[in-house]
Image (spheres, helix red, strand yellow):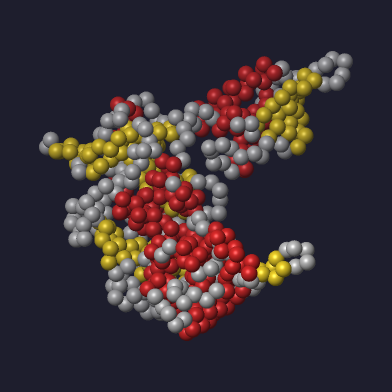
Length: 569
């Protein structure tokens, strides 16, 4: 296995300077012979410490594997020999090939055999049965209780001690117990990092090996104990191999997988002409990640159009798959697809990635009230006049089905309170007062008292604030999105390619404005790009300050967050 500290991280401008293209993964530099881990675009702010690199690596491993599995499950013809008309997967020399959706480019994927081998062994061998056969699980066979009692020591209190350690039995035929322990320890460590479910027996055997051979601090993927752990595993494997006289096919299958994992490092098979781990057209994965994220996080939105081969029909009741220009498009039953240019009675079809209808008509402040983030109650002063006052408070609890930072919520709360401060008696801005008797008293940053205003007037003004916020800041009715596997810097340069992308997006926008379905609806075009951030928000909108994008918004998608949705979908 390789040490993550030995990988040189390539990101941002360096990736562009080295002309890495859309490749994401690990490969050897031809000149320096260093192993380069090339990260996705948008990772300029990534901190390349050991744990971050390890986290990204295993998430990428799962992402690539999911992509391959989904592509193999696409309902199209699979053949050993790729034909340009088919979206085909071909397996050979540890790699897969796919023709892309445009049938004019080959997507290459290559895997890491040392990890694949460990996982394949568990599929090919019944590990749980081998554990029992080798006596690694101390389950008493009560049908043989008489033979156990015969070997027991009878004590004065009528109890019996049986000096019989099931785990110490020597088995002539089968796999030695210790190589199963070594395998289970490595396999368990891998699955922990991959966040996969682990069988309890595998966990127990892994713990048993660790308890006997390693310290409590040691771990296979621990930055500080990686080398010492690998050394111990190699020593134990060597001893088992030297002192095992009988080696059957199951033994060799397990031994080869463990040996390759421990000794091969990140050295690619010389026969594999690709010579890398990763994928050389990550833009295809980027589109799958984004579409999967959006479709699995629909709250008050509705898909009208989606250019994807993935099987989303079972998740969306309103869509069907229809053929346009030879491509299967997911489309709402009531949406008339007019994404085409007509010339001499021929239609040239265009394909935006995603068109979404927004059904959320509430304002953000109203949403905070509806979910109890902002709340109010009426109390009475304890005096002879029994005057009422209104307490408005802010809660830090999490919003349901909506991603918003604490700062966004507090800002909306302050905006709401400020509206009443402007209406009231103590008006620092000296704007005409609507309610001369209204006083807004701050108790703390999350608690205010409003005195001199009735509950009915407060509610009427509150609804007016909701309406104003809804009109000024409501989401557009329709979003037309194109996923772009490009860095943010790409949109800051006035390149011919950017102009072409803008023209294409504005053409989508033009088609929507001329679609009967979108009549009297507001439309917003967006480019969705990858962006690495530690924020909890799923996306951030980037302002186009100079207007060079002609109204098209840049949506910076939080790579970690949406990748997590993709992996768990």
